[in-house]
Image (cartoon, rainbow, N blue to C red):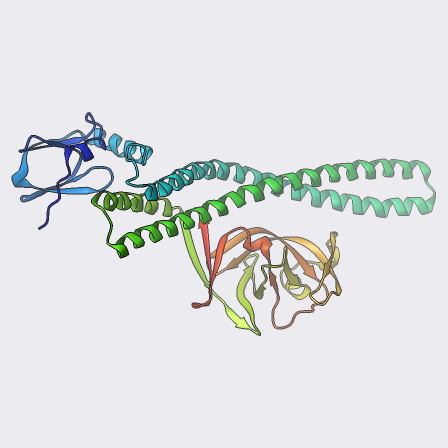
Length: 370
């Protein structure tokens, strides 16, 4: 068995004396850390950025701290990251700087996620209010027309006042909704940025480490630095889940199976150039959505430049594989101009995730924060 002993100068600064186990060596040096294996022929100690295996023959004695002290020391290591462990070279300093930025970003994400849930609840309540106000205004407009024909001025003025009041309420509710949706999307964008930032750091780590291995210039200090950083990255990665969803190719386009509102299975064409997700009127009918009762009209311009009539709607959910997005902005197209698919999966769904395309394996790769 090959054993590795670090000098006192390299190891001692990684542990706090009062919290750590201490191994006293026969050469009068000592090593602080957490003993993780105490075997007949050797002792393994975690020194905060890796482990050291010491032959029993070189050890004079071992002083162990309490379990509570060890737990506190582990937290200190996790909290301090690299502050007491300088990068071996300027090459590694870039990794440290990016890692610290990532930690700061993660704290923000945790805070934003709590606020995001609160915003989602407010958005849901506002949408219900807007739907109710729209129904009230629609009913009042019919009453106003009827009373106007009957030339009942007093009743007419009363209804107009009520109509204006509801219209003002509706405008305020829509303004509030717009602002909340912007906040929600901004919080969501920060999550996507964090995931992309993590993936860039992981790639940078691999590039730098592989170069050192290829050139055979990896020093002992660098070896433990990279091991330590890899452990930290693995901890961060636990919050990032990855899902792959298979797609098919159809006339050069990417087509994928999806489930809308947990009830209707559809075939969707992936379109990263579309701001909104698009479904056909036939799909809306299968979802038991009455196209004619929807109040918000939208004009779309097709690929060939033709104008298409559509209605705006918020879909409760769209699920592809195990990846689910909720409250998806979409439009329902009255006259279906696309063949072989039920609609387009646009950025109103895709932007909720950090995603990429694996053409070799014919799959979309989704990364999201949990």
